[in-house]
Length: 419
Image (cartoon, rainbow, N blue to C red; front, side):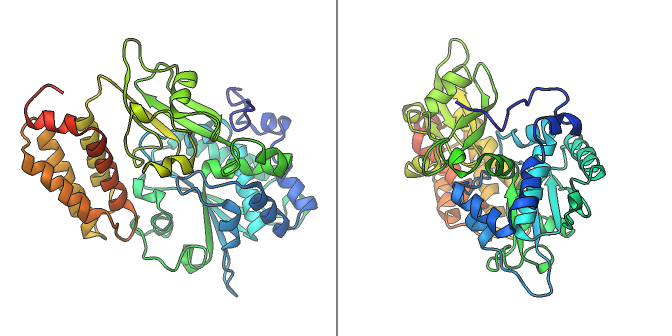
């Protein structure tokens, strides 16, 4: 099993340009500038089968090909490093430990798209990561690897590091663009989509950190190399953030589709804490919903999880042992969605998330009645079609998954029994 995204990640000096160059940093970008046309790069990425790692799992090459160029308007590229998904902590690892990998990926994507200004949008709380990225950018520009007339090829690329407000909603592309423009981070009505009218009304492509970090390796090693890793439908490795009631929480690089969820938890994270068994697992971050321990033998790829009504999401696995309170966990997630919604765009999201949080809290405290459960079901039904963005649909589906798979936990709380 070959590791490439986390290769050498524990070297203390990997974030320094000299060390990064010793391990091949920017070789892929210089290869593109010397030997590839922008169209060649797009075709290479599309042929590789790389799919976005931000939760949508759309073909990266097809997304790049969707860019609608407009006469007399620039195009932009944005890398989304807001990482607000509950249970996800892998993007910050890349930024802090191997920032030049991310910068090189942004540079290759920008060249391929004919972009001269790119943004890296970092979650506001990631102060140390932001400073590391800024220094790395300065160092790369000093060596003419980024900036003006890169490597004397005539290609100019200005990369701007932007700190978002830290909102979860910034994970939604158009909310991120509004934040970049200085507006509240609220989603936009679509269409038009960002590839046609994004940042400042100009065509814009947005990819997340892990997606971008795969790009230099594809350019350096080729399509056949990448396609041979993982599964045919979704090639490559994935960074899994594993947390909760496990012996070895952390970030693990695993080929997509090569292991079941149970195998990943047992073989990589050491299994559940001593003396405990697994009660539930959230397989792809807080927005992907609950699975019971009976469903853990499913192969971990986006298509398999979709078939059982779940989501691969960001590959952020949250493990809950037999000591976990499912009602409390469900209420915490509902509160998260309530607090992180944009609040002033969609009444259905604002009202629905408040309702869900209130009724779940009543049940958690042992003060709930069957009427509370009935109102939760009605609220889920009202939110299922979504709003301006997918937040209400996501929040309601997460709560619904808990109710479907663990009804006894809620009923026991209502009956004032020990769960």
